[in-house]
Length: 590
Ligand code: ATP
Image (cartoon, rainbow, N blue to C red; front, side):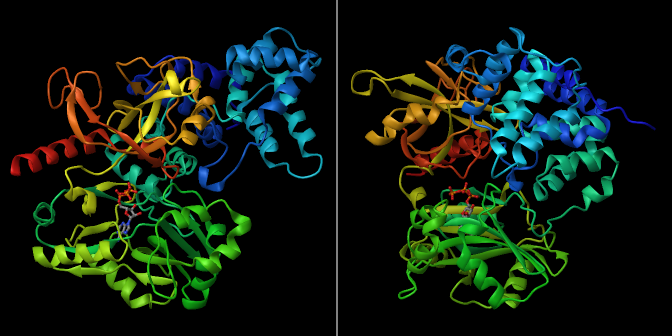
């Protein structure tokens, strides 16, 4: 059958529909309908809906700055750049600026290309892939080509994709639901989600679903060199609660305070990825070099935490030493000599061609012990296997003395598989802070900002923060944050947030407060607070603990930005409910 490529105008009409709804079910159905129409263009379409050309871990940058787009708009319309800049300042969005320029008339060629989705995708690939001498001109020409061959609405969305601001308000989980609705049966939903967690590339999932390769997806475990979504821990506030929850059958490991590290090895090639699936191999030359000299597997995937340490004393250094290493490529070699890293291995997902994720944890640990001899650069997470409360407490105290954050209990149960991307009760963390009256810190998303007054004039006085409700894919407000900022941070805030300000309430935000500026959910901050209280103004867990009320964090203060977390990795509503309940329990007990 001859396949006719999908028209981009068709895609764009669906984008407009999506912008007009915030209801998840409706979004899912719109996506499903669009996916069904796309035929062989599906994979490209799925990336474009995400505002991308490929999955994040491949690291494709579109690479056309706002300035160059303005230049291109000026060239194609014959209007001075100053005019275009004025429109841009008025509209605050380059997509709408391009739309206005396009509708007010640009020089069009005699023959206009039929703008297909495939054509747009290929031009965007051109924009992303040209580098080196003369590349700026080639990139601008590709953009101008798209501009003259598209109508105003098409160029609006194309420009937004190029500037990384498509913002249709659909999370990966909604796209996944749309794909399942279009091509599969709901009964496979959980397995497809697991496949996605091991292979977080929606294009790959889409292609397999469309080709009806359901078997391939159901068997999709981890694959070396492809990052997976790491397994996460729940939290409890007392060791006895943890022992009970674990059915008195658990191991306890040190909770190292470093950088989550997934190391992949295949036929001599190593790749390292962060918790957020970003490839960070070049930041760890010492680990890469030493892995090859100590171990000789065909393939493997291990999960662990990399921590800087003092090789003289074996003492662990604070996490900040590692974070300094990230992104400072040119100082790395020197820095590596000064501050070597040790990777504490706590899990293994794959070895010599075989997935191990369905084995229970005790078996996976045995495999680590058998295959990974400890050395200066690779150590096994320290652990004990016991149910004795005082022994666990002593182990916990030792972990703090040795520079760790606490301990992680790991279920020894028969069902203790490696659950990618899931925060579950197979792992439970217990940190030092849980022993004070405060619960754990929260990772919250900035969704709004209030103008500052007095000393804070010209910057923000407070930020509106939200948690993530992963059941209905919304961000629910938890607190207004006004303290913990240093003067530098405060001064930097408007710049840091300026390109995230949007005119109306972002699609997935649920807030009854109206801040001075809405912020598109992307920045995650680590926040500590005094306690979680019932609140009539915040929407987190609305009507769950009390009718007409939600939950709020009292006296929040900023600890630091969590740039390793995406908004969907923020503390969830469910976690805050759990924190509220266990805090109540502590108060009742004392
Ligand atoms: P936190 O902010 O407390 O580090 P998180 O959201 O990054 O939490 P959690 O799943 O809540 O992640 O806590 C587990 C984290 O602890 C892991 O992401 C990992 O980086 C770190 N960690 C350190 N040692 C261990 C260990 N032995 N087993 C599992 N995780 C460990």
